[in-house]
Amino acid sequence: MRVLVVGGGGREHALCWALSRSPLLTKLWCAPGNPGIPEVAECVAIGATDIPALVRFARDQGADLVVAGPEAPLTLGLADACAEAGIACFGPSAAAAQLEGSKAFCKAVADAAGVPTAAWQRFTDASAARAYVRERGAPIVVKADGLAAGKGVVVAATLAEAEAAIADIMESRVHGEAGATVVIEDFLQGEEISFFALCDGETALPFGAAQDHKRVGEGDTGPNTGGMGAYSPAPAFTPELQQQAMDRIVLPTLTEMARRGTSFRGVLFAGLMLTAEGPKLIEFNVRFGDPECQALLLRLRSDLLPALLAAAQGDLAGVRLDMSDDPSLVVVMAAEGYPATPRKGTEIRGLEAAGALPGVRIFHAGTARRADGTIIADGGRVLGIGGTGATLRDARDAAYAAVDALDWPGGFCRRDIGFRAL
Ligand code: AMP
Ligand code: GLY
Image 1 (cartoon, helix red, strand yellow):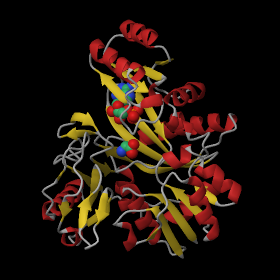
Image 2 (cartoon, helix red, strand yellow):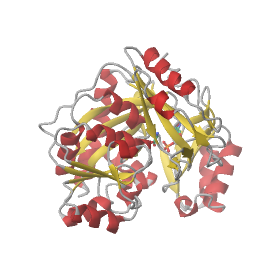
Image 3 (cartoon, helix red, strand yellow):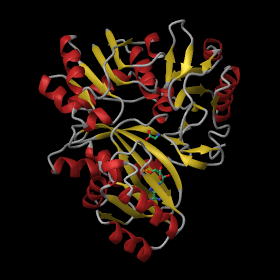
C-alpha cells in the first residue's frame, strides 16, 4: 500500500511513524514533512495547501491513500480533489470540514443534532454583539467564526474584556475575514478533554481521548497556544463519559451531517467540557489534535493503516483498535518567545542521545536542518518529547528525562504536563 501524508508538524511525524510500522505499507511519502520525518518516510517538497500539486503527485505515484494531517488542506478541498482523481483520502470533504472551518456552522449542526453545547448567538454587527454580551453578562466567550490559527477565541472574565474582544475581532479584524462573523457563547465550567473518533460517514469508532494543555504557562496561565503537552488516557474521561460522548455528541452529529448530504469521513475531534451535567461540546475539529495525536499514537498497538483506509473508504465495520493501557505523555518544547514571536535559528543539540533514552520518542515539528546537518528551531512549537511507561508518572519522568538531556538554551517547555491527573 502506497501512502501520502500531508503536513509537516509533530502530528504528521507521529502519523508517519505509526504508518511506517504497518506490514501493509510499501511506500510512504510526507508533503512537505520536516527534518524528523525522513527516518520513516520520504519527504516531498510540496506545500500542505497546494491541492493540485498534492493530487497530481499522489496520482503520478500511484498512491492508494492520502492522509490529511492539518485542517487547511481539507477546508481547501483536498478530499474532494482526491475523490475526483479516484484516490482514497482520510479526511472530510470541504463541505464537511466546515465543522471546523466555521464555528457558527458547527454550532448550528450541534443544535440541529441535539448535541449538548453552550447557548450561543452569531453576529455580523459589532453593536448587536456588544448588546448581547451586556445582556448575558460575564464570564462569556467570544469567537471569530473562521479559522484563526487557534487564536480566535477569547474567554472573557469581564464585560470589558468581552467588548475589547468584539472590537479586536470584528472592528480591527485582527484575524482578518475570519472575524467578519463572531460566535458568542456561554462560559462552560469543567475539565477539558480532547476526544477522537474515526468516522466513515455513518458510524464511528472511538480512538481514545487525551488532555491537552493550551496555555503557555504552568498551572494553565498565560496566552493560549496550539497545545503545550498532552497525555493519554485521561482518567477524568471515564468509559461511561466516553459512551455518553459517542451517543449524545459524535453519532448524532454524523447523522445530521449525512442528512445534510455532507457525510463526515475521517477523524472527528470533539473538544469537550466535562461539566456537572455531563460532557458538552466546545468545538469540533476535523483532524487529529497536535500534540494529542502523538500521545494517542504512542499507545496504539494495532495497525493504523487499515483503520485510516477503512474510514476513508466508508466502511469501519471490520476495524478494531487496540490501545495499550500504559499511559503516554508528550511535552512540547517551544522556541523562546512563543506564542507571540518565537525566535528562529537557535541550535538544538543532543537529540540522538535524548531520543535513545528508555520509553522516549521524539517528534519533530518546527525544526529545520542546516547544510552542515545541525538541527535548528524554525517555528513556534519545535519538538514533541513523548514518554511512555507503566504509570503516568513513569511516562512523565521518561519525557522530562529526555527534555533535560537536550542541549537547547533557546527552547522552553512547561514542567507540569499531566498535573491534573497526577
Ligand atoms: P476553541 O478554539 O473553540 O477550542 O477554544 C479555545 C479554548 O477556549 C478552548 O480550548 C477552551 O479552553 C476555551 N473555550 C472555548 N469555548 C469555551 C466555553 N464555552 N467555555 C469555556 N471555555 C471555552
Ligand atoms: N491541540 C489542540 C489542537 O490540535 O487543536
